Every structure is written in structure tokens, then in C-alpha cells.
Image (cartoon, rainbow, N blue to C red):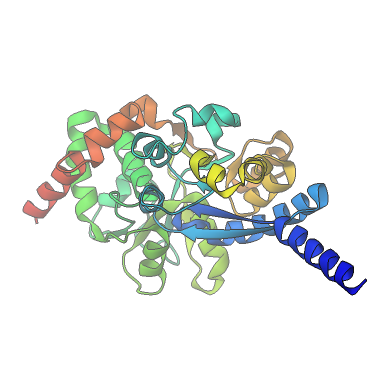
Length: 332
């Protein structure tokens, strides 16, 4: 009888272990707090639906660095990045997911989006209102390195795209030389740039996602920081995907897909809006309309072509970014 009880206990224990799963979400640098709140919601949802206990772990860093880590062996089940090219590279260089990953979820597999905003110090002493003001006088800037950060690539493209509309191609290029030479530090990711601006007191303006600007203001009320959203801006999508090869190896395909689908639910969309991300759910949009100022958004593709072309033309070694930086150094 004792032997039967022992066997039954071991069986129950093994079933309990078998019913516990782990997911690893590889995400961009400034999403820590967001997913710290989303993950418990999904864990509770999944347990209520399936009875399965799920643990969700996080890996954070510059989006491109996260992609490189996955190619080199990080067994992330899902990616929640801030640039589609960093998911494309998982197919192109690792064949870790299919080329058509965008077609598997709504809105080009982007459950939420943002745009760029300026964070300025108390009273906006440099009177920063739009992109053109960033190259006036002795204004100094902080944003991450476009070579390692999707956040920074969007900053670069937003600034360049707005300058093209305002000045035309040739004058826009000259403006970009001046714009880039004003950056006092190129951190590897968005959170490092925030630290440089807030804790190290570097720069007059931090340029980052609108969501991050709002969250910084809420986190540091005593600093009386101010948000400025420029009139012309880039649409910054936040694409997501499950990593097919890894979920097959990890036995987590069902959980990974459900996790990303959960991001489109009203509950998750409201939480995203609470973190000042722009969302697609109609009711959530209506309920949060006062949080998001109107801005004229353009897409990267409209101005610069697809992301592969953007990388080749602007962010590859010795491409436009490197040339602009070199010209800025020579002009000092």
C-alpha cells in the first residue's frame, strides 16, 4: 500500500513539473517595467484557461543586441522588439522564423506603436518646440547609438524625415550633420540614455520614444521635466513574433503564440496605454485620447524605403550615418 502511495505521489509530482512551463521574452531596453506588469496578467489568464503554471522570464537590451544574442544561441521563445529589421535578421541570418512573420498577427504583428518625443528640463529653458530648434544656439542632445538601438534609429529617421520635409534633401543632409554633432553621449540603449540625461545631467534634450518620455516625467515629478512632441514625426511600430525554432525545441509553441495574442486584448491594450503607448483597440483609443497629442506621422517606408534598404543606406558600416558623423567631427 505504501509503495502504491509513493508511486502515486511521484506521478503527481511529475505531472506537476510537466504542467509548469517557462517562456523567455527577449525585449528592447526600456520595456522592463511594461512587461513586469503585463506578464502577471497573462500568467493568471493562462492558468485560468488551461490550469498550467507559467513562468515568464525577461531579457532586455538594445533591440539589435538582443537579436544578435538570439542568433548566437539565446533560446528566447518570443521577441518583443522596437524595430522590424531586428526580427527580419532572425530569419535572414539564423532561419529561426519564417520570412512572413508579420502576417501571423494583426497590424503587421505590431500590437502597439509610438513616436518620438523630446524630454526637456524644467521650464524648457532652450525653448524647444520642434526638430528645427534642436540645432539652435548651444543645444546639446542625448539619445542612444543608432548602431545598437532601435530607439535611436527611429530618432535618426524621424529627424532626417522631418528635415527632408522642411528643407529638401540637400539642406536636410547638412542639418543632420549639425544635429548629430550635438549628441554628447551615444549610449548602447534607451535606458542608458535616460540615465545619462537624468542621473548624469548630460544634455539639454533627451530624444526617445513618447512612451518613455511620459514614464520618466511620472517617475521624477520633482524635476518638473516637460514633454515636447514635434509636429512631424515617424510611426514607430513595436513588432512581436514567436521564434519558431526555439519554441519547437522548448515545447512552448502554444504558450508563446497565446502570449503575443494576449497583447491585442482590451486588458493588455489598456495597460499599454497606461504606459503611454499608442494602441489599436478602438475602445481603448477612445478612452485614452487625451494622453496623446496630434502629430503628423510618416512611415519609414514612405520616406526611406524598406528596412533592408534603410540599413544598407544608413546604418551599415561606412553608410550615411558614419559619413554624417565623420563630417560633424571635421566641422568642430
